[in-house]
Length: 159
Image: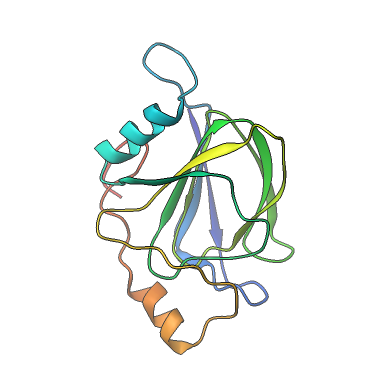
C-alpha cells in the first residue's frame, strides 16, 4: 500500500480543510492478496471506528460535508474524481484504493466505468450532511470545530 497526502486550502466556493490532509491509499489488499471486496472494506473501516454507512457511487456535482470526515473504499471499477472544488485535482481511483476526505473537502465524480462502486464510512458519532454551496459562518465553524478522527480508517493508527 502507498499513501498520498494532499493539503487543500480554500478553492473557489469550496472551503476544503487546510488542517487535515486528504489521504489516497493505493493498492490495498486483503491478507490473502486479493483486492478488498465490499465486505472486506466494511470490516476494515468498522474495525477502526469508521462504521460503514452506504454502498454506491460518487455524486457528479461538487459537494462537501461539514459535519463528518468521509472515507471511500473502492471495491469495484475505476473512476476519476475531482478533489478540492472547481479546477481542483483530478485523481483516478480503482478497485483496491481508498480515499479519506476531511470535512469541508470538495469532491465529485468526473467519470466512471459502469462497474465503479465504493463503500462510504464516517467516524463513530459523526453524521454526514451534504453541502453544495459556499459555506456560511455556521458551516465554516462546524468544519473547524470537528476534531481529527481518532484513528485512521485503513490501518487503525492514531490520527
